[in-house]
Amino acid sequence: MKFKLIAQDGKARAGIIETDHGLIETPIYMPVGTQGTVKATEQRELIELGAQIILGNTYHLYLRPGMEVIEQAGGLHHFMNWQKPILTDSGGFQVFSLTALRDIADNGVTFRSHLDGSQHVFTPESVIQIERQLGADIMMVFDECTPYPCEFEYAKKSNEMTLRWAERCIIAKEKQPALYGHSQALFGIVQGSVYPEIREMSARALTKLELEGYAIGGLAVGEPLEEMYRMTEFTEQFLPTDKPRYLMGVGTPENMLESIERGVDMFDCVIPTRNGRNGMLWTRDGTINIRNAQYKTDFTPVDTECDCYTCRTFTRSYLRHLFVTKEILALQLASIHNLSLFLWIVRESRNAILEKRFAEWKTTMLARFQVSSTVSEQPSISFI
Ligand SMILES: [Zn+2]
Image 1 (cartoon, protein in one colour):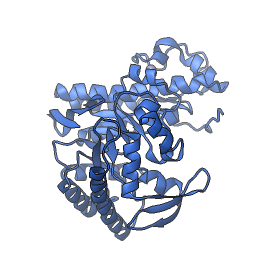
Image 2 (cartoon, helix red, strand yellow):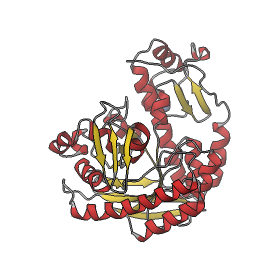
Image 3 (cartoon, protein in one colour):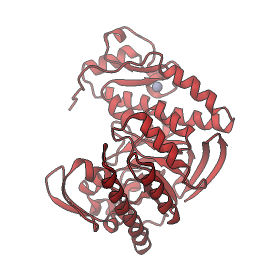
Image 4 (cartoon, protein in one colour):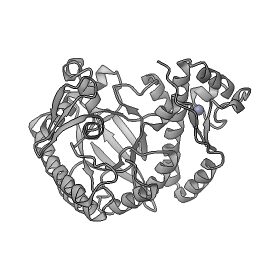
C-alpha cells in the first residue's frame, strides 16, 4: 500500500491510497459491510455510487460464515465478489461491546459469542490470522476500544496493553504471510479516551512502530461532540503527514466535514444505512423522516440535487408509501440515497481541498444541513 498526499488546504488533506485492488481517493467515506454485505445494497450499486473501499467486520465474519468458508472462497473479496479495496476492523470493538466477556488479559480476550454463547479467544496473533484469511487490503491491529466515560487509570492501563498488542500484531503479520497474492497493510489505533496525555503517549509510541496508517479510535462512543473534535485535533499533531489517518466510527456529514478540517482522511459509519432503514434520509438541506405525513403527496425526489438511482427514479411520496407499507424495497432505496449523499460529501470535500476553498465549502454545507433538520420521533420499523 502506498499513500500520496496530493494537496492540503489548512489542515484538510487530499490524497491517494494505492492498493492492489485499486486506488482510493481521500478523504473517503467507507460504507460498512458488517457481514460481508453493505446492508440492503448490492455490490453493483456500490460501484455505481462511487464507493471506493468498504469495511468488513472481523468479529461477525469469524462467527459466520467462519474462516474455513472464507478461505475456501479465496478470501472476502471473492466470497462477496467485491474486487475493490476492503478494510477489516480487528473485532476489538465488537468483542468489548457485544459479547459477554469472560476475561481480559495481556494474552488476549476470552468472550462468549452474542449468537450462541460459545466461548472464543481473540489474541493479537489470532486476529491477524483471521484478517489474513479475510484478505483485506487494510487490516487493523487488535485493540481495546475503551467505553465512555472511562477512568483515567483504566484508559492508561488499557492503552499500554493496546500498544503491546500492536507490537505483537506486527510480529504476527511478519510470521503469517498473505494468502491470496495481494499485499495487506496494517494500521495502528491511537487510544486514550478523552485524555490528551494518554493520546499523546499512544500516538508517539505507535508512530515509532512505522505502521502503514493510523486510526484514531475510542471516539464516537458516547462522548460529547466537542470532546470528539478536541481529541481528534489534539491527536492529529502527533501523526505523520505521509500516512493516512482514519477516524473510526465517524460519523454524520457534519462530523466528517469538521474532521476533514482537522486533518482526517478516512471515515466509516453505519448511520446512512442503519438510519436509512428507519426512514431517516439525509439531504443537502438537512435530514427528513420520510414516513412523516407531509410527504404523502410530495412528488419531488428526496433531494433534487442528488443524481443517485433513488432520486433519479422515485418520489418522496412513493418512498413514504414503501416505508408505511413495510415494503423491503424501501430499505434498498433509502440506503442507496444516503450512501450516495455521504460519498458525495467526501468527493466534494476533496474537490474543494484541491481548489483551496475547503473552509468556504464547509461553511456553506453546514449552514444548509441545518435548514430543516428534524429528528425522528417515531419508533423504528421491523421489516423482517
Ligand atoms: Zn439520492
